[in-house]
Length: 490
Image 1 (cartoon, one colour):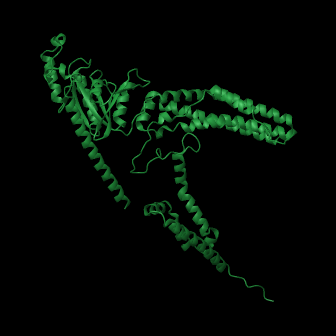
Image 2 (cartoon, helix red, strand yellow):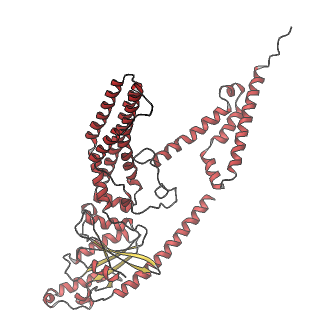
Image 3 (cartoon, rainbow, N blue to C red):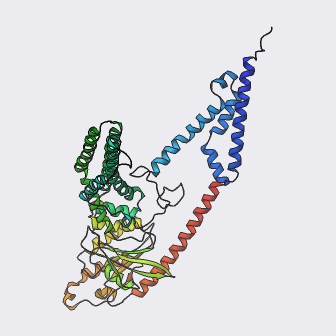
Protein backbone atom coordinates (compact mmCIF):
# COMPACT_ATOMS: atom_id res chain seq x y z
CA UNK A 1 0.00 0.00 0.00
CA UNK A 2 1.13 3.43 -0.80
CA UNK A 3 2.43 5.40 2.15
CA UNK A 4 1.10 8.85 3.24
CA UNK A 5 1.61 11.61 0.76
CA UNK A 6 4.72 13.70 1.63
CA UNK A 7 4.36 17.42 1.37
CA UNK A 8 7.35 18.98 -0.40
CA UNK A 9 9.64 20.83 1.98
CA UNK A 10 9.21 24.08 0.07
CA UNK A 11 5.43 23.98 0.47
CA UNK A 12 5.80 23.19 4.18
CA UNK A 13 8.16 26.12 4.61
CA UNK A 14 5.79 28.44 2.74
CA UNK A 15 2.95 27.35 5.01
CA UNK A 16 5.02 28.26 8.07
CA UNK A 17 5.87 31.62 6.56
CA UNK A 18 2.22 32.38 5.74
CA UNK A 19 1.08 31.52 9.27
CA UNK A 20 3.80 33.67 10.83
CA UNK A 21 3.01 36.58 8.50
CA UNK A 22 -0.67 36.32 9.37
CA UNK A 23 0.22 36.46 13.06
CA UNK A 24 2.43 39.48 12.49
CA UNK A 25 -0.30 41.22 10.46
CA UNK A 26 -2.85 40.69 13.23
CA UNK A 27 -0.43 42.19 15.77
CA UNK A 28 0.12 45.21 13.50
CA UNK A 29 -3.63 45.72 13.13
CA UNK A 30 -4.04 45.65 16.89
CA UNK A 31 -1.27 48.20 17.34
CA UNK A 32 -2.79 50.48 14.68
CA UNK A 33 -6.20 50.40 16.33
CA UNK A 34 -4.55 51.31 19.64
CA UNK A 35 -2.53 54.09 18.01
CA UNK A 36 -5.59 55.66 16.37
CA UNK A 37 -6.55 57.19 19.70
CA UNK A 38 -3.14 58.86 20.13
CA UNK A 39 -2.23 62.33 18.79
CA UNK A 40 -0.64 62.54 15.38
CA UNK A 41 2.60 63.95 16.77
CA UNK A 42 2.85 61.05 19.22
CA UNK A 43 2.29 58.50 16.43
CA UNK A 44 4.91 60.20 14.28
CA UNK A 45 7.39 60.19 17.13
CA UNK A 46 6.72 56.51 17.81
CA UNK A 47 7.19 55.71 14.15
CA UNK A 48 10.50 57.51 14.12
CA UNK A 49 11.59 55.61 17.24
CA UNK A 50 10.52 52.19 15.84
CA UNK A 51 12.17 51.68 12.46
CA UNK A 52 11.55 47.94 12.77
CA UNK A 53 8.11 48.32 11.15
CA UNK A 54 9.22 48.77 7.55
CA UNK A 55 12.48 46.84 7.95
CA UNK A 56 10.69 43.75 9.29
CA UNK A 57 8.17 43.84 6.45
CA UNK A 58 10.89 44.21 3.83
CA UNK A 59 13.00 41.48 5.38
CA UNK A 60 10.19 38.93 5.34
CA UNK A 61 9.11 39.90 1.83
CA UNK A 62 12.49 39.41 0.16
CA UNK A 63 13.85 36.44 2.10
CA UNK A 64 13.88 32.96 0.71
CA UNK A 65 11.93 30.18 2.46
CA UNK A 66 15.13 28.64 3.86
CA UNK A 67 16.17 31.98 5.36
CA UNK A 68 12.74 32.52 6.86
CA UNK A 69 12.84 29.08 8.45
CA UNK A 70 16.09 29.98 10.25
CA UNK A 71 14.82 33.40 11.32
CA UNK A 72 10.99 33.62 11.29
CA UNK A 73 9.33 37.03 10.89
CA UNK A 74 8.28 37.06 14.53
CA UNK A 75 11.92 36.66 15.61
CA UNK A 76 12.95 39.44 13.23
CA UNK A 77 10.18 41.58 14.67
CA UNK A 78 11.26 40.99 18.28
CA UNK A 79 14.98 41.46 17.62
CA UNK A 80 14.51 44.70 15.70
CA UNK A 81 12.08 45.99 18.33
CA UNK A 82 14.47 45.31 21.22
CA UNK A 83 17.44 46.81 19.35
CA UNK A 84 15.58 50.03 18.57
CA UNK A 85 14.45 50.65 22.14
CA UNK A 86 17.30 49.27 24.27
CA UNK A 87 19.43 52.43 24.08
CA UNK A 88 16.40 54.63 24.76
CA UNK A 89 15.42 52.58 27.80
CA UNK A 90 18.95 52.79 29.19
CA UNK A 91 19.08 56.55 28.63
CA UNK A 92 15.69 57.06 30.25
CA UNK A 93 16.65 54.93 33.23
CA UNK A 94 19.92 56.82 33.67
CA UNK A 95 18.16 60.18 33.45
CA UNK A 96 15.43 59.32 35.93
CA UNK A 97 17.62 57.55 38.47
CA UNK A 98 19.09 59.69 41.20
CA UNK A 99 21.45 58.62 43.98
CA UNK A 100 19.24 55.68 45.03
CA UNK A 101 17.76 52.90 42.92
CA UNK A 102 14.31 53.85 41.73
CA UNK A 103 14.72 57.55 42.53
CA UNK A 104 12.48 58.97 39.84
CA UNK A 105 12.51 62.59 38.77
CA UNK A 106 9.39 64.50 39.73
CA UNK A 107 7.42 66.37 37.03
CA UNK A 108 8.94 69.65 38.23
CA UNK A 109 12.49 68.28 38.02
CA UNK A 110 12.40 66.14 34.88
CA UNK A 111 14.82 66.79 32.02
CA UNK A 112 13.06 68.94 29.40
CA UNK A 113 12.77 67.99 25.76
CA UNK A 114 14.55 69.94 23.05
CA UNK A 115 13.07 73.42 22.72
CA UNK A 116 11.17 73.11 25.99
CA UNK A 117 11.84 75.51 28.84
CA UNK A 118 12.83 73.75 32.04
CA UNK A 119 10.83 74.55 35.17
CA UNK A 120 12.12 74.24 38.71
CA UNK A 121 10.41 73.88 42.04
CA UNK A 122 11.91 76.47 44.40
CA UNK A 123 12.87 75.85 48.01
CA UNK A 124 14.56 72.50 47.46
CA UNK A 125 16.72 72.95 50.56
CA UNK A 126 13.69 73.35 52.82
CA UNK A 127 12.41 69.94 51.69
CA UNK A 128 15.50 68.02 52.72
CA UNK A 129 14.66 65.20 55.17
CA UNK A 130 15.52 65.34 58.85
CA UNK A 131 18.52 63.06 59.44
CA UNK A 132 18.94 61.21 62.74
CA UNK A 133 22.33 61.00 64.44
CA UNK A 134 24.39 57.92 63.65
CA UNK A 135 24.30 56.74 67.28
CA UNK A 136 20.51 57.05 67.42
CA UNK A 137 20.11 54.95 64.29
CA UNK A 138 22.37 52.21 65.69
CA UNK A 139 20.49 52.07 68.99
CA UNK A 140 17.15 51.95 67.18
CA UNK A 141 18.30 49.06 64.98
CA UNK A 142 19.45 46.97 67.96
CA UNK A 143 16.21 47.71 69.81
CA UNK A 144 14.04 46.62 66.89
CA UNK A 145 16.06 43.42 66.45
CA UNK A 146 15.65 42.40 70.10
CA UNK A 147 11.89 42.99 69.91
CA UNK A 148 11.44 40.57 67.02
CA UNK A 149 9.37 37.48 67.88
CA UNK A 150 9.14 34.07 66.12
CA UNK A 151 6.08 32.87 64.31
CA UNK A 152 3.24 31.49 66.39
CA UNK A 153 2.90 27.78 66.95
CA UNK A 154 6.53 26.95 66.12
CA UNK A 155 8.74 24.82 68.34
CA UNK A 156 12.40 23.95 68.77
CA UNK A 157 14.41 24.32 65.54
CA UNK A 158 11.59 25.91 63.55
CA UNK A 159 11.06 28.49 66.28
CA UNK A 160 14.76 29.35 66.50
CA UNK A 161 15.00 29.62 62.73
CA UNK A 162 12.04 31.97 62.55
CA UNK A 163 13.39 34.09 65.40
CA UNK A 164 16.86 34.36 63.85
CA UNK A 165 15.58 35.32 60.42
CA UNK A 166 13.18 37.92 61.82
CA UNK A 167 15.84 39.50 64.01
CA UNK A 168 18.24 39.84 61.11
CA UNK A 169 15.52 41.20 58.86
CA UNK A 170 14.39 43.64 61.56
CA UNK A 171 17.91 45.00 62.02
CA UNK A 172 18.44 45.20 58.26
CA UNK A 173 15.20 47.11 57.83
CA UNK A 174 15.97 49.43 60.77
CA UNK A 175 19.23 50.43 59.12
CA UNK A 176 18.32 50.43 55.43
CA UNK A 177 14.87 52.01 55.42
CA UNK A 178 15.93 55.35 56.98
CA UNK A 179 19.13 55.42 54.93
CA UNK A 180 17.19 54.93 51.72
CA UNK A 181 14.82 57.72 52.74
CA UNK A 182 17.79 60.02 53.31
CA UNK A 183 19.37 59.20 49.97
CA UNK A 184 16.15 59.73 48.02
CA UNK A 185 15.44 62.94 49.95
CA UNK A 186 18.72 64.54 48.85
CA UNK A 187 18.21 65.10 45.11
CA UNK A 188 20.93 65.01 42.52
CA UNK A 189 22.40 68.55 42.19
CA UNK A 190 21.74 68.39 38.46
CA UNK A 191 18.05 68.89 39.33
CA UNK A 192 18.66 72.08 41.30
CA UNK A 193 17.76 75.50 40.01
CA UNK A 194 21.02 77.11 38.80
CA UNK A 195 20.86 79.72 41.59
CA UNK A 196 20.40 77.04 44.26
CA UNK A 197 23.20 75.06 42.62
CA UNK A 198 25.41 78.15 42.98
CA UNK A 199 24.38 78.51 46.64
CA UNK A 200 25.29 74.86 47.20
CA UNK A 201 28.74 75.43 45.74
CA UNK A 202 29.28 78.59 47.80
CA UNK A 203 28.02 77.07 51.05
CA UNK A 204 29.37 73.55 50.88
CA UNK A 205 30.68 72.39 47.48
CA UNK A 206 29.06 70.15 44.92
CA UNK A 207 31.69 67.43 45.45
CA UNK A 208 31.17 67.23 49.23
CA UNK A 209 27.39 66.95 48.78
CA UNK A 210 27.64 64.19 46.20
CA UNK A 211 30.30 62.11 47.94
CA UNK A 212 28.44 62.21 51.26
CA UNK A 213 25.14 61.07 49.78
CA UNK A 214 26.86 58.38 47.73
CA UNK A 215 28.70 57.15 50.85
CA UNK A 216 25.39 56.79 52.70
CA UNK A 217 23.90 54.87 49.80
CA UNK A 218 26.95 52.57 49.57
CA UNK A 219 26.72 51.84 53.30
CA UNK A 220 23.02 51.05 52.92
CA UNK A 221 23.75 48.51 50.20
CA UNK A 222 26.52 46.93 52.28
CA UNK A 223 24.26 46.55 55.32
CA UNK A 224 21.51 45.09 53.17
CA UNK A 225 23.88 42.49 51.72
CA UNK A 226 25.17 41.45 55.17
CA UNK A 227 21.69 41.13 56.66
CA UNK A 228 20.23 39.14 53.77
CA UNK A 229 23.27 36.91 53.57
CA UNK A 230 23.15 35.85 57.22
CA UNK A 231 19.36 35.45 57.09
CA UNK A 232 19.81 33.00 54.22
CA UNK A 233 22.40 31.08 56.25
CA UNK A 234 20.08 30.79 59.23
CA UNK A 235 17.28 29.62 56.96
CA UNK A 236 19.45 26.78 55.61
CA UNK A 237 20.74 25.53 58.99
CA UNK A 238 19.19 22.67 60.97
CA UNK A 239 20.54 22.95 64.53
CA UNK A 240 19.14 25.60 66.87
CA UNK A 241 22.57 26.34 68.37
CA UNK A 242 24.02 27.06 64.93
CA UNK A 243 21.06 29.27 64.07
CA UNK A 244 21.47 31.30 67.25
CA UNK A 245 25.21 31.70 66.74
CA UNK A 246 24.77 32.75 63.12
CA UNK A 247 22.12 35.26 64.11
CA UNK A 248 24.35 36.90 66.71
CA UNK A 249 27.28 36.88 64.32
CA UNK A 250 25.22 38.56 61.59
CA UNK A 251 23.92 41.27 63.94
CA UNK A 252 27.41 41.92 65.29
CA UNK A 253 28.86 42.16 61.80
CA UNK A 254 26.19 44.67 60.73
CA UNK A 255 26.91 46.80 63.80
CA UNK A 256 30.66 46.63 63.16
CA UNK A 257 30.14 47.62 59.52
CA UNK A 258 27.91 50.51 60.54
CA UNK A 259 30.41 51.67 63.18
CA UNK A 260 33.14 51.73 60.53
CA UNK A 261 31.17 53.66 57.90
CA UNK A 262 28.49 55.45 59.94
CA UNK A 263 30.32 58.79 60.10
CA UNK A 264 28.78 59.70 56.75
CA UNK A 265 25.35 59.81 58.44
CA UNK A 266 26.52 62.54 60.81
CA UNK A 267 28.09 64.36 57.85
CA UNK A 268 24.76 64.20 56.03
CA UNK A 269 22.97 65.53 59.11
CA UNK A 270 25.35 68.53 59.21
CA UNK A 271 24.83 69.18 55.49
CA UNK A 272 21.04 69.14 55.88
CA UNK A 273 21.20 71.54 58.81
CA UNK A 274 23.44 73.93 56.90
CA UNK A 275 21.40 73.94 53.69
CA UNK A 276 18.05 74.36 55.45
CA UNK A 277 19.32 77.62 56.95
CA UNK A 278 19.73 79.16 53.51
CA UNK A 279 17.06 81.74 52.56
CA UNK A 280 14.44 80.51 50.11
CA UNK A 281 14.96 82.29 46.80
CA UNK A 282 11.85 83.31 44.87
CA UNK A 283 13.18 81.89 41.64
CA UNK A 284 10.33 82.95 39.37
CA UNK A 285 9.66 86.43 40.80
CA UNK A 286 11.19 89.34 38.82
CA UNK A 287 14.08 90.78 40.82
CA UNK A 288 15.68 94.21 40.82
CA UNK A 289 19.27 93.80 42.00
CA UNK A 290 21.26 96.83 43.14
CA UNK A 291 24.88 96.21 42.24
CA UNK A 292 28.07 98.15 42.85
CA UNK A 293 31.17 98.51 44.96
CA UNK A 294 30.97 98.26 48.77
CA UNK A 295 29.41 101.19 50.70
CA UNK A 296 27.98 103.02 47.69
CA UNK A 297 24.45 103.28 49.18
CA UNK A 298 22.70 100.17 47.81
CA UNK A 299 20.97 99.24 51.08
CA UNK A 300 19.56 102.75 51.51
CA UNK A 301 18.09 102.66 48.00
CA UNK A 302 16.51 99.26 48.70
CA UNK A 303 14.70 100.78 51.67
CA UNK A 304 13.65 103.83 49.62
CA UNK A 305 12.31 101.74 46.70
CA UNK A 306 10.48 99.14 48.80
CA UNK A 307 6.77 99.52 49.37
CA UNK A 308 7.03 97.67 52.68
CA UNK A 309 9.50 96.87 55.39
CA UNK A 310 12.61 95.23 54.02
CA UNK A 311 13.92 91.88 55.27
CA UNK A 312 17.42 90.72 56.10
CA UNK A 313 18.63 87.43 54.60
CA UNK A 314 21.67 85.81 56.24
CA UNK A 315 24.02 83.40 54.49
CA UNK A 316 26.45 81.11 56.33
CA UNK A 317 29.43 82.23 54.24
CA UNK A 318 29.08 85.91 55.15
CA UNK A 319 28.50 87.85 58.37
CA UNK A 320 26.63 90.63 56.57
CA UNK A 321 22.92 90.20 55.91
CA UNK A 322 21.38 90.90 52.51
CA UNK A 323 18.55 93.46 52.60
CA UNK A 324 15.51 92.60 50.48
CA UNK A 325 12.23 94.43 49.83
CA UNK A 326 9.46 94.44 47.23
CA UNK A 327 7.25 96.72 45.12
CA UNK A 328 4.44 96.24 42.59
CA UNK A 329 4.18 96.96 38.88
CA UNK A 330 0.57 96.64 37.69
CA UNK A 331 -0.32 94.23 40.52
CA UNK A 332 2.75 92.07 39.76
CA UNK A 333 5.13 91.72 42.67
CA UNK A 334 8.80 92.50 42.13
CA UNK A 335 11.68 91.96 44.53
CA UNK A 336 14.28 94.64 45.09
CA UNK A 337 17.45 93.42 46.74
CA UNK A 338 20.82 94.61 47.87
CA UNK A 339 23.80 92.53 46.78
CA UNK A 340 27.24 92.15 48.35
CA UNK A 341 29.69 94.79 47.19
CA UNK A 342 32.04 93.88 44.36
CA UNK A 343 35.70 94.73 44.14
CA UNK A 344 37.19 95.56 40.77
CA UNK A 345 38.88 92.24 39.96
CA UNK A 346 38.43 89.14 37.83
CA UNK A 347 35.69 86.63 38.68
CA UNK A 348 38.16 83.84 39.46
CA UNK A 349 39.69 86.06 42.16
CA UNK A 350 36.40 86.85 43.90
CA UNK A 351 35.47 85.52 47.34
CA UNK A 352 32.26 83.68 48.14
CA UNK A 353 30.25 86.74 49.10
CA UNK A 354 31.11 88.43 45.80
CA UNK A 355 30.22 85.27 43.88
CA UNK A 356 26.74 85.45 45.44
CA UNK A 357 26.23 88.72 43.55
CA UNK A 358 27.42 87.14 40.30
CA UNK A 359 25.08 84.15 40.85
CA UNK A 360 22.16 86.53 41.40
CA UNK A 361 22.82 88.30 38.12
CA UNK A 362 23.52 85.06 36.27
CA UNK A 363 20.62 82.86 37.34
CA UNK A 364 17.70 84.97 38.63
CA UNK A 365 15.25 86.97 36.47
CA UNK A 366 17.10 90.17 37.29
CA UNK A 367 16.98 93.83 36.35
CA UNK A 368 20.38 95.37 37.11
CA UNK A 369 20.59 98.75 38.86
CA UNK A 370 24.26 99.68 38.97
CA UNK A 371 25.01 102.19 41.71
CA UNK A 372 28.00 104.56 41.39
CA UNK A 373 29.11 106.81 44.26
CA UNK A 374 30.89 110.04 43.20
CA UNK A 375 31.08 111.50 46.70
CA UNK A 376 34.38 109.84 47.50
CA UNK A 377 33.02 108.40 50.77
CA UNK A 378 32.66 104.75 49.72
CA UNK A 379 36.34 103.88 49.92
CA UNK A 380 36.47 102.82 46.24
CA UNK A 381 37.89 105.22 43.67
CA UNK A 382 35.72 106.50 40.84
CA UNK A 383 38.09 104.92 38.31
CA UNK A 384 37.70 101.46 39.90
CA UNK A 385 33.91 101.85 40.00
CA UNK A 386 33.86 102.73 36.30
CA UNK A 387 36.00 99.72 35.41
CA UNK A 388 33.74 97.46 37.47
CA UNK A 389 30.67 98.85 35.74
CA UNK A 390 32.21 98.34 32.30
CA UNK A 391 33.06 94.72 33.11
CA UNK A 392 29.57 93.88 34.37
CA UNK A 393 27.90 95.82 31.56
CA UNK A 394 29.71 93.74 28.93
CA UNK A 395 28.78 90.56 30.78
CA UNK A 396 25.08 91.15 31.53
CA UNK A 397 23.62 94.21 29.77
CA UNK A 398 22.83 92.31 26.56
CA UNK A 399 20.52 89.92 28.46
CA UNK A 400 19.40 91.90 31.50
CA UNK A 401 17.53 95.23 31.74
CA UNK A 402 20.05 97.82 32.97
CA UNK A 403 19.72 101.17 34.78
CA UNK A 404 22.54 103.38 36.07
CA UNK A 405 22.19 105.34 39.30
CA UNK A 406 24.44 107.99 40.86
CA UNK A 407 24.00 107.74 44.63
CA UNK A 408 24.59 110.27 47.43
CA UNK A 409 23.87 113.13 45.02
CA UNK A 410 23.22 115.50 47.91
CA UNK A 411 26.93 115.27 48.75
CA UNK A 412 28.22 115.81 45.21
CA UNK A 413 28.51 119.45 44.08
CA UNK A 414 28.43 118.67 40.36
CA UNK A 415 25.07 116.92 40.89
CA UNK A 416 23.59 119.90 42.68
CA UNK A 417 24.43 118.79 46.18
CA UNK A 418 26.27 120.52 48.99
CA UNK A 419 29.25 118.83 50.58
CA UNK A 420 29.71 118.50 54.29
CA UNK A 421 31.60 121.55 55.63
CA UNK A 422 34.28 119.29 57.06
CA UNK A 423 34.71 117.60 53.67
CA UNK A 424 34.54 120.80 51.64
CA UNK A 425 38.30 121.05 51.40
CA UNK A 426 38.47 117.54 49.91
CA UNK A 427 36.77 118.72 46.72
CA UNK A 428 39.23 120.43 44.42
CA UNK A 429 39.34 121.05 40.71
CA UNK A 430 40.74 117.57 40.04
CA UNK A 431 37.85 115.93 41.91
CA UNK A 432 35.29 118.01 40.02
CA UNK A 433 36.92 117.12 36.69
CA UNK A 434 36.95 113.39 37.55
CA UNK A 435 33.29 113.49 38.61
CA UNK A 436 32.26 115.25 35.39
CA UNK A 437 34.18 112.70 33.30
CA UNK A 438 32.43 109.87 35.13
CA UNK A 439 29.02 111.44 34.49
CA UNK A 440 29.90 111.70 30.78
CA UNK A 441 30.85 108.00 30.67
CA UNK A 442 27.57 106.88 32.26
CA UNK A 443 24.78 108.04 29.95
CA UNK A 444 21.20 108.39 31.21
CA UNK A 445 22.18 107.87 34.84
CA UNK A 446 19.62 108.90 37.48
CA UNK A 447 21.01 111.01 40.34
CA UNK A 448 19.54 109.99 43.70
CA UNK A 449 19.98 110.59 47.38
CA UNK A 450 18.04 108.11 49.51
CA UNK A 451 18.05 110.04 52.79
CA UNK A 452 16.85 113.29 51.20
CA UNK A 453 14.54 111.52 48.74
CA UNK A 454 16.25 113.06 45.71
CA UNK A 455 15.53 111.26 42.46
CA UNK A 456 13.77 108.31 44.09
CA UNK A 457 10.37 108.93 42.34
CA UNK A 458 12.16 109.33 39.01
CA UNK A 459 14.04 106.07 39.59
CA UNK A 460 10.80 104.26 40.47
CA UNK A 461 9.20 105.58 37.27
CA UNK A 462 12.17 104.42 35.17
CA UNK A 463 12.06 101.00 36.77
CA UNK A 464 8.33 100.64 36.16
CA UNK A 465 8.65 101.63 32.49
CA UNK A 466 11.64 99.39 31.88
CA UNK A 467 10.12 96.35 33.60
CA UNK A 468 6.82 96.77 31.75
CA UNK A 469 8.66 97.00 28.42
CA UNK A 470 10.84 94.01 29.26
CA UNK A 471 7.78 91.95 30.15
CA UNK A 472 6.10 92.74 26.82
CA UNK A 473 9.26 91.81 24.90
CA UNK A 474 9.55 88.57 26.84
CA UNK A 475 5.95 87.62 26.07
CA UNK A 476 6.48 88.39 22.38
CA UNK A 477 9.63 86.26 22.29
CA UNK A 478 7.79 83.40 24.01
CA UNK A 479 4.99 83.58 21.43
CA UNK A 480 7.59 83.54 18.64
CA UNK A 481 9.32 80.53 20.17
CA UNK A 482 6.03 78.63 20.49
CA UNK A 483 5.13 79.46 16.88
CA UNK A 484 8.52 78.25 15.68
CA UNK A 485 8.13 75.05 17.68
CA UNK A 486 4.72 74.39 16.14
CA UNK A 487 6.08 75.04 12.63
CA UNK A 488 8.96 72.63 13.22
CA UNK A 489 6.52 69.91 14.31
CA UNK A 490 4.38 70.47 11.23
